[in-house]
Length: 257
Image (cartoon, rainbow, N blue to C red; front, side):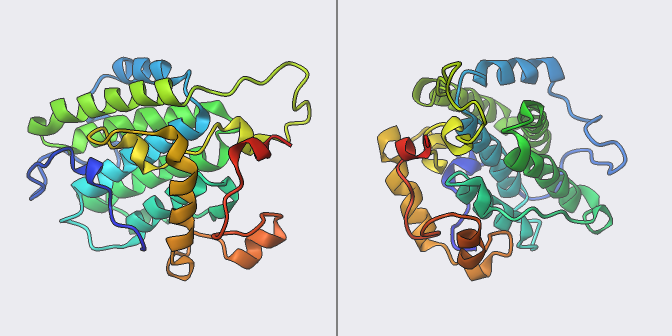
């Protein structure tokens, strides 16, 4: 993996040692304490934001999960999921579709990691045409992270999550598509909204959304593609019609064509 876990996922620090939460692979989310209706209300608050920024929020939530279990997990796969997911915000075609067998991801550490990427992956691939995939991923990941975190970190976590929602709604409103525009649905990347990176979710740092294109382009250029099997090769991307993969990022306005 080329990029480390981002500092925002640490939520200003907490004790990661040990397992202090209930986990049964057969119960899915039945032991989660954060009420579903409260998290669904947060999803509704985020709805005015662009799809790209809302997908970024889901990636950030999964990164919180990965950070929580960092001291207990030595499998590189979840970190590779995080890295490839951030790059998919440049263009969804960068991301390979991948699934992992459930019976290889069981127990109180691997089980939550599997559940997290299993909810995140469909949203990254399908939310353009299936908005319910985004809401499902957001609600599950938000409640999963809350469940795994120690109670002492809950206030910081919820403040961070609500702050992220406020930030994407303010800086990344969904683009407006006029009734006579894009009748054949060819502007999918433009419809996702302007570019977003992990910087958007670092609430401790001033945020300039106009710098996101350059940030994301630098991230693409610095990626060790061969080290992450969840990323498509430059050759495969060129065959799919993506110009200069991992080298140049098209200006957002040029996607409206």
